[in-house]
Image (tube, rainbow, N blue to C red; front, side, top):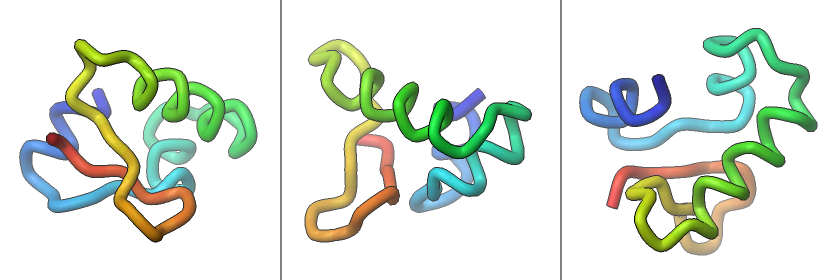
Length: 56
């Protein structure tokens, strides 16, 4: 779901991801952080911006 969103939009906040998935904000943030740490996953944090992610 996050990758599909990022293919259309330049970035995604934790708040947006939380709304899309129905997850609580802290759970959504933890999930995005796990995605970002996986070398095979193209979702990465925007440098210098907290809680903002982009598609590499």
